[in-house]
Image (cartoon, rainbow, N blue to C red; front, side, top):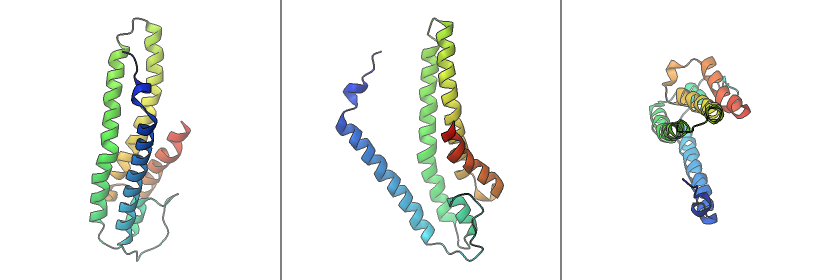
Length: 158
């Protein structure tokens, strides 16, 4: 099958995709910022984290955080799980195409490339899904910090 990237990806579509990603991420950030602004913080104001993470902030709040946690769970499901599942489906299609290659060397090279990429994608999405879609009471602070380190530092280095 020939690739149709040049005929599909026009400059206007490229600009539209960039604008869409900016609008959606700005909306997502504002949603969490406004929900966080309604909370009161009467405990210690030291965040036991290496950056200002939502889960760490929610633990410092003395207000009811159920709405915040519900929004994190719902938006996280949409923003994290759906793309991760789509990536896994696309890799399943890639694997089925690779298995049709007659050369054993070609199969090894393809699996080597895809395997390393899929392991980094799984590490990235797995730690984020584990951190944000699991109830915050179940994760000790050290575990949260390590998981946040994995997706903010380790995966970009890989």
